[in-house]
Image (tube, rainbow, N blue to C red):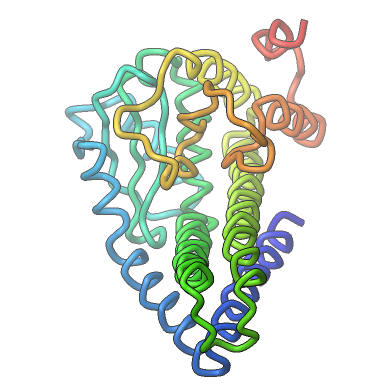
Amino acid sequence: MEQIKTFLLLGSLSVLLVFLGGYLGGTGGMVIALVMAGAMNFYAYYFSDTMILKHYNAQEVDPREAPVLYRVVERLVERADMPMPRVYIIHDHIPNAFATGRNPEHAAVAITTGLLELLNKDEIEGVMAHELSHVEHRDILVATIAATIAGAIAFIANMMQFGAMFGNRDNRGGNPILMLIMAILLPIAASIIQMTISRSREFMADEGAARLTGHPEHLQNALIKLSNYNTRGEVQGATPENAHMFIISPFDGKKISFANLFRTHPTTEQRLERLEMLKNELNTPRKQNKLYDRHYR
């Protein structure tokens, strides 16, 4: 269901982009908009992983430097029959993690030192299973496409706003008021669709992690701890553009208007409830998750 939802939402973003291009320049405008989106996607597809790891000063580690973490990832990829990703550590006291890379053969997982200190081995396994599920589902590629199309829509909308303010009537329709309204509303609509795609993929990764480990309570406990700690600060250098990559949004501790519309992640409560439902399917004893019980008292 989440896969179908993602494809429909990506289709909606594409329609918005083509509509904007067509409104401004007819068939030629549509082609230009599609070429622009394609070029942006090509660059992001091949270079986004290098850029994001460098942005957070992530350091690649081997089995000698991070034996516990490395063994956890090795066991999970063997169980999932996936290629071994590169493993990185980010020296930051705020606990969080993300995956990046264009496909399973060119993937990397990164985890902060704060997460390694906060979580136990089982909980780290739950987090890494979540990130590897993102890799297996090619969520990084999906998120990159969604972000670049939304960015192209915002760029074209800025052009429309400029034209409306300065009375450019050479485009089709030529109504400056309509152009201004579209320039304001369409980027908002694109952002909402992009965030909805991100939330949908998080649910899929949670389910994938639960099935891979066979213990949904491991990820549940990790999410509770991460969510509670997240109110104390955010990963250094975190930006709204890459917040969707993390297992917990770096900005969940901030009070933002219309938060539910523009959230990159489902709420922790929503994620815990879905994982709890998976327990029945996987026949996982509920009594194993004492932290979950205390969270809902």
